[in-house]
Each structure stands twice: as C-alpha cells, then as structure tokens.
Image (cartoon, rainbow over all chains, first blue to last red; front, side, top):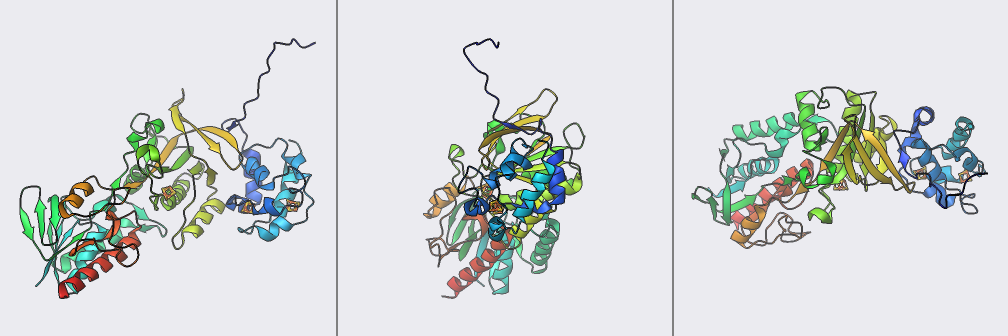
Length: 110
Length: 334
Ligand code: SF4
Ligand code: SF4
Ligand code: SF4
C-alpha cells in the first residue's frame, strides 16, 4: 500500500526543450515542412467539427508536437473525423487533414 | 542661392541634401560624427533583399561627393531656429531653412538587466550580430559555433517598464533576416524566435517570414522571454510562455540575440525646446500633421526627414528625405 504523506507532487507543466526529444518532430516537419508556416490563427480549430463537440484543439495539438510534446497527441487525433474543413480555411494553405494523418502515422507509439 | 542646413549626415540627411541640390538650393550637411553614413555604417545586409548595406552607403556618399555638397563633420548642434543653427562650440550658422534628420538612438540592452546583456557571455544585440556578420565571423565567446540560438523580439520596444511604448517596426523583419543568415551559417543549429506579434508590414516581408518558417526551419514561438540565466555548463537558460499552447517553456541556448528597438534621441528635448517644437509621447519629434504635414515641423521653415519623427525603414526614410527637401524648396520659393 502506498504511504499517504498528505500531499502529492505535481508534474512540472513546463515544456522543457532540453529534455524533449525533437527527433520525431523534426521527422514530421521534414515530411511536411509546410506545417512550420502555421501562424497560429486558429481558423482550423474554429471550423473543426470535432472541436465544436469535444475538447479537441487541432492547432494546439500540432503546436505541442512541434515542441516535442507527443504524449496524448495520437489519442487526440483519433477525435478527428477527417472532414477536411480545416484544410479549406487554413490561410497558409497547409494540408491540415494530411497533418492529422501524418501525426497518427508517426505518433502511434507515444 | 538659398541655403538649407541639413542636420544629420545619415541616409536621410544625405538624400535630403541631394534632393535640395537638385532643386537648386544650397545644402550644408552638419554631421556629429567624423564621417557621413549614420547607422547605415554598422549594418551588413539590408532586409528584405539581403542587399549589402555598404552598396547603398557608398552610392549615397558618391552622389554627395559628386554633387559637391558641403559636409561639416564633427559638429554637434545644440539649438535650432528656422534661420539659424547653433553648434556646441558656440558657432552660429545662418540659413534660410532647416531639415532635421538626426535619426534615432538604439535602445541600450543593459537596461533590460533580466536578459543579462553585458553580464553573461553570448548575449548579444541585433546590432552586435550585424557587426559580426560584417566581420565575417559569428561565434560564441569561447570561439565555438552555437548549436542553439534564440532571438527575442521587442527588446526596448512596446515596454512600459523602460518607458518605450511604441513599436520599432523594423526589428521583426530584422529578426527574420538575421535568423535566416544564422541558419545559413550554421546549418546544424536550431534557431528560435520569441515574438509578441509578427509585424511583417512591408513588401516582401511576409514572404520572407514564410521562407524562414518553411525552408529554413526557424521555430517561431509566441511569448516573451522573461529572463536569461547562466547554466553550469556555460550556456544560457531562458524561460517564456509558449502562449499558443498555454504552457510555460524553457530551454538552454548557446546564444541569445536581443532585437533592440529604436528610441528617440536624448537631445530631441533640447532641440525641441530651442525652437518651440512638440514631441510625441515616446520622445520623437511630432510632425505638423499626421497626414498632410508629415515632413514639416509646426514651426515654419523647419522640416523633418527620417526616423527623427518615428521608427522607419530605410526605404521610407529615403522617400521622406526627398519629400522633406521638396517641402523645404517650395517653402523657400514662396
Ligand atoms: S479534418 Fe479533423 S481537424 Fe480538420 S476540421 Fe475536420 S475534424 Fe477538425
Ligand atoms: S488554420 Fe492553418 S495557420 Fe491557422 S492555426 Fe490552423 S494550421 Fe495554423
Ligand atoms: S517590429 Fe516587431 S520586434 Fe520590433 S517592436 Fe514591433 S513588434 Fe516588437
């Protein structure tokens, strides 16, 4: 039985670039360099079918992935219905639906 | 022939003098330093085209020389009036009008102590980096190549804490340009730009930003670095919020580049007082009208060219110098 000390230790919330392994994200960005042109406008999230019904935030998840934060990204991407509306609105012309598929292909292990 | 004193021998002053001469007026350029060129002397290549700054500088100087324009160097102006300019050595120069083209002052990065400029190694300003580019050698203090570099936008701009509320306009695009140059120099290095807003207002700027993102793999993180501190292995630890993910972010870097802003010259206050001119909240000279009198002072016979009224790009500065000279020439005709 675990001993109860009367407090818990919170996991640090900070993104630590020194500790994160950026190899995976480099690999993703090499396959789709256009993802780096994201200007964080949030149009993709604004139109997102899944995002309007669940806590799914496509912009936030792919930004986290670019910082080497992969945990949970695959599961999040499973919420996407691949409707493709995000791709219609992205002002940078990013194939956002393609990003969803790429993240699912690359991040299954995380 | 009517005579106009142009105060300041930088890009604005030289261009204004050239235009005055072309309009049949006799200009006299009064420059504080021992040579003309102003801030252009410290720059290596210019955004967004990567044109060598030296090309523009030598072309302007050549034209000034060939037009036989008189240049008085090493002369500091302490007071102005439409028909008289007073120097610090007590001399009074008579004229028929004055063009004020005294430019700006670079923000002193030491004032933002939390970034450690002048305290830790490998914290440099955009102006320092430009000098390093010009010398053809960028390296850490120990002579090695940096592997991770961070740029911080808005140092000494948009910051109540240092009494500089304005945006300096040119530092965003300078940060993009310099980040690209560093990536070219150190292909294995990671470059991060920490920005508050990306202000890509000029022709070709947004295109360059996009190229920096897509082709040069520069990481743009929205958030202001709060502080830098040295690590035990001689690197710099920086902290910020990655505001687009809502999470604190930290990392160590080998070099921190501070994109220092443009601030108003300290002597604007004395010059304004001497001629009864107004200044804007951030200390730059206030033009007569923001639409129809952009190059004129509220006092007849005094004109403004370039960054003495607000931060501007070189292109805007050169255009404005032409406009100021034209306005002065028209004024003298009347
Ligand atoms: S494709 Fe997926 S991420 Fe894009 S709008 Fe549709 S559900 Fe949202
Ligand atoms: S719409 Fe495009 S540019 Fe805007 S946040 Fe989404 S991916 Fe980025
Ligand atoms: S141009 Fe960019 S870096 Fe410079 S003050 Fe304005 S927002 Fe900040």
